Length: 305
Image (tube, rainbow, N blue to C red; front, side, top):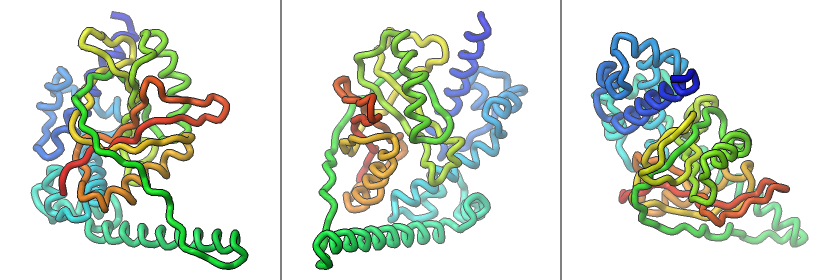
């Protein structure tokens, strides 16, 4: 086995561990069971994980539980704090509150209240800006202005096998460079152009340190595809998603995600579940190399409240 092939095998095994953790956050996760997922010796696994991730297994588990919990507190305002705590593997509300405050500097209920206040403040500033702009445009006579309604549809998807490369770090422009400099050449080498692609954002940069945010650039593959090099394979979960079209640049997409999650979702009578959000790039999706503008569908996993 070459050095590159050996490195790729380590990557595949560690990625299986990270997937297993995210799928089983509500369960007790011990070193031995996670080492078995990676087919590594439990004796060496803790040291291997720390070297690969830059943090111990215990620190990573605690961070992921708390970051997922913070996302659920924000996206599911009616969900009780205790339910959130249990859903990410904490045995009691008290233990969860202590850990949450140590990580985020505020108790879960206080953090959620601060988030609601920030949203109200943002809405107020937006209204004030619109009123000021329309007053200037009409010579001082302000009138009420509303943003156009979002074109959100509910879709049902079957599970889809995908091959992917992972980017770890800030979203936005770095992700655009990742597609151009690494993903594009990989797709060409593997002869995977002309297929549906996806961008999976695993983390919320307002919660997770941007340097640790994970983004997977994916392409649909069938069961015959065997990954090579740094490529990995996973299954994009099926089920019901809310989908909204996007057209703009990498600098615009954060605001579009915010509109979908903070403006549309709360009034939808739906909530997010544990599946990842993703961008869907159809085969005929347009891209303008001169401006960097592109089009895709923003998809969020939804379930009844």
